[in-house]
Structure formats: C-alpha cells, structure tokens
Amino acid sequence: MAEPTPDPRHVFDVKTLEMLVCPLTKTRLVLSADRSELISVAARLAFPIVKGVPLLALDEARNVDPQTLRRLPELDGGAAPRAALPPGAKG
Image (cartoon, rainbow, N blue to C red; front, top):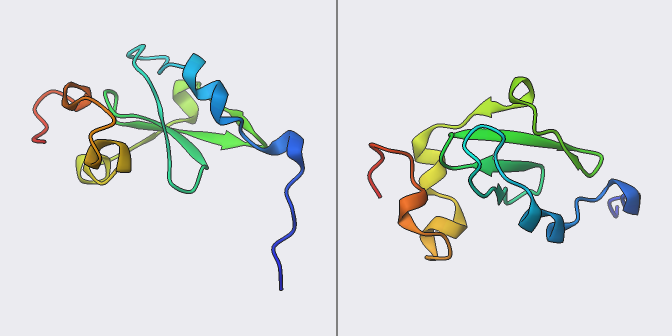
C-alpha cells in the first residue's frame, strides 16, 4: 500500500535551510536523514519540523548525544567542517 502524498504546504523546503541558524549558537543547522528535524551540531540540539515548519524555540528542542552527531552524513562526508563539532567532542 502506497504512503499518502503529504500536503505540499506541510513539506519543509530545503532551500529554507540556508537561511536558518540555531537560535542558541547562531551556527548552521543540518537536516536529519528522515527530514523531521533540524540539528544544531554546536548546541547538540534537534529542533522538530511540524507540518513543514521548523520549531526553533529552545523549549521545543531535544538533546542529541555526541555519538548520534558523529553519524550525521554531513560530518562523515566532509561537507561540514570538523570545527562544527562541539568543544570536547572527538572527530
């Protein structure tokens, strides 16, 4: 059975990602593999995307453990600078 097509108004536009930064650290955000969160590597926070809208309020964010951050494709492939890792994290 095919998954229903999401309402286009509720899909996060990846181009928007270029304009957004973490509200805490003002660093760039990374889109999660399942496209349901924006991740701040520097702050170790994941902000949910609800109906295509990123919720960038600190009280909406969840903590992300450093091991999960290291598995992000952007960090493995070299697309993001290693300096983006949080202080004390080994890369």
